[in-house]
Length: 287
Image 1 (cartoon, rainbow, N blue to C red):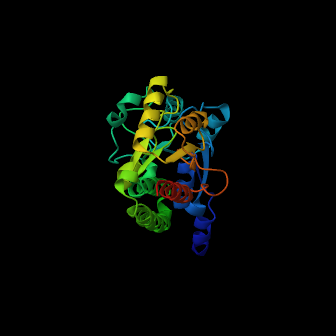
Image 2 (cartoon, rainbow, N blue to C red):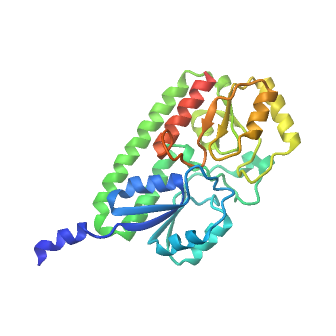
């Protein structure tokens, strides 16, 4: 009988995991490999800031053995409530990270978000801790696969390190004064801090926050004055406002950045793909 034990361990059903949004789904799947089956509440190309919880989401939550949230109040209140009330094990991927205070964006303080900027995933170095938090939760729920998860975490950590090294190289020849970009909402502060890029945005941390006419007018003046060349729309945000600003400032749109959601197909259908696309696009536009 004992001889069959290893087969039993390998043949177990994958762990059902639900994540709040698509970037987390990919990272959790990469870390969990074939031992996990990950679904997401908020699918690719969908704006997490305005997403409303649906009946099928409640079914996914009930069926899950583990729930992975970003934390830092990124998820809307209804998702936080539903997951807490489910009694399931929850891990907050951003737990224990040196989060950027919202104070830096006070003119856009959002009622939905807490005291910190939740968009941690735009910094590959912080993602080392983020992925470790998820990996530890997988080990807690499936301790017999500990070595497997640790090995996958190590591989992923080294991919994150390579991503950072490559990103730093993309920006190193761009003078500090040219490292400026306009995006639809304030979601790139972590990328900005890591690689010394100044990001401007008409909307706040949440796309829920409407941009005032006065702030848009001030932004238009600033773009003209600072000669900002890199102007981007985002995959999950209505492009009209950025297009209007680009027109008023006679700047050419530099393309699309992926802020809070993956794309269905390449280039941003994985987290690493999303980062490589964004960094390449930014570097090309700022040169």
